[in-house]
Amino acid sequence: MDILLLGSPGAGKGTQGAILAERLGLPKFATGDLLRDAVKRGTPVGLKARAVMEAGQLVSDDIILGVVREELAKPEARNGVIFDGVVRTVPQAEGVTSLLKELGRQIDRVLFFDVPDREILTRIEKRRGIEGRADDDPAAVATRLKAYREQTAPVLDWYRARAGVELIPAVGRIDQIAAKVQALLGR
Ligand code: ADP
Image (cartoon, rainbow, N blue to C red; front, side, top):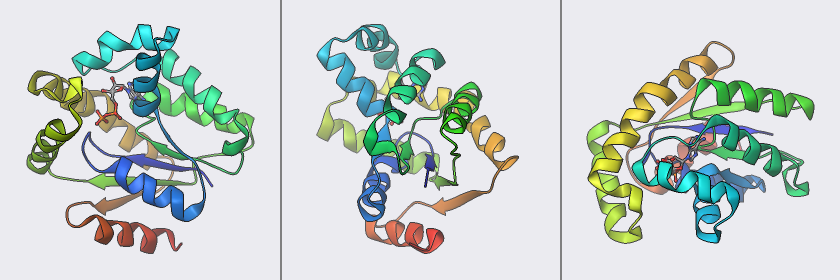
């Protein structure tokens, strides 16, 4: 089963995705984490992505689809994957669809984590104090939210037109939100 998580930066996709991955026994695949790791290791992808990420802009679709192709080729991905923050533009949605199609698969469920902007800003500010990510500084956050509104929000409509998108009100305790996800998926 392939599950796609959508939602603004700070919506809790990573947290809920980890809980879901554990419960379903599927790997969670987050482009943000993979790219940060590539930057740390100084790989060719990391060298290309670093400045773009620090500014809060989106990494190019080519790089992202290359990373997705590599991840899907791994043996642990054969039974399905939880895609966390992977699809952020319409061309990425199209690309992921064809990569899965080559494997005889498709995105089976799309979950959208819905969180109001005001709450998002509070969460990112709090995370900045804990994780110290370069792209959590106020200027980069503003750029990330703009990229989300302009490039990622249309992805929601793209999926709505093709498959069901399930909306999860994602404010409240982590375990309560996880319970909503479980109820929705029926597992
Ligand atoms: P967030 O979603 O909270 O902004 P992530 O850790 O998921 O944080 O991503 C950090 C950065 O990595 C993004 O701001 C962007 O530069 C880059 N990135 C991650 N995934 C993608 C993607 N699918 N397309 C383009 N850029 C991406």
